[in-house]
Length: 202
Ligand code: PCA
Image 1 (tube, helix red, strand yellow):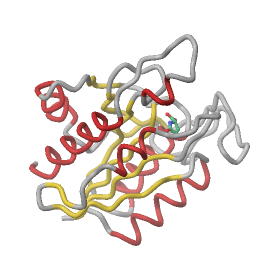
Image 2 (image 1 turned 135 degrees about the horizontal axis):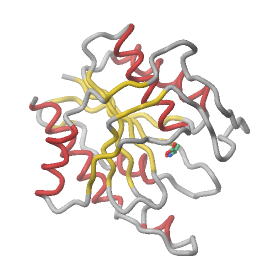
Image 3 (image 1 turned 60 degrees about the vertical axis):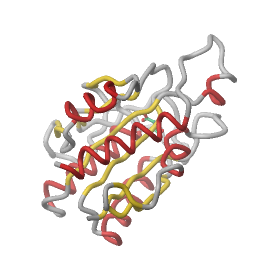
């Protein structure tokens, strides 16, 4: 079994993106599954292309995409992606789409293909703050989640996947005022490892 795990590059003036920092800490194998890591650009168009290329190149059984959700106090297990781009800030290519569909005429939303409730139990039993989330926003993370689930629906049948948001790392949070909540990158990595274990075991 092969698992593609993605994080994002920094954006919005931050020095690091804790999502990819956490992905980098994952081992090469989890529960016998091979882990393939990728850093996606925080740019609408290039992120979609990069995700598709990685899926085509590696043909993973499971895809878990991750990103940072500034202000979040725990890991957020995203359950829904909506067909909307509505950026609050420019992406890393200077694009700031508003009121646009990701897939013109596509379904309004896709539900995650990850066992989010089981993952939630695993995380909270292991002392990691986590919650189910019903909005991945309308920026690049929601875009990537929607694109992933659209690909799983239309081209890569049988692929399981979804999206997990992690909080700021202490290093990123420390540079902001008012001080936002943060989670150690090592803990975020532990959360991702548990999420992968639960999904592989399903
Ligand atoms: N978080 C942003 C995009 C990249 C990232 O790590 C988001 O939540 O949309």
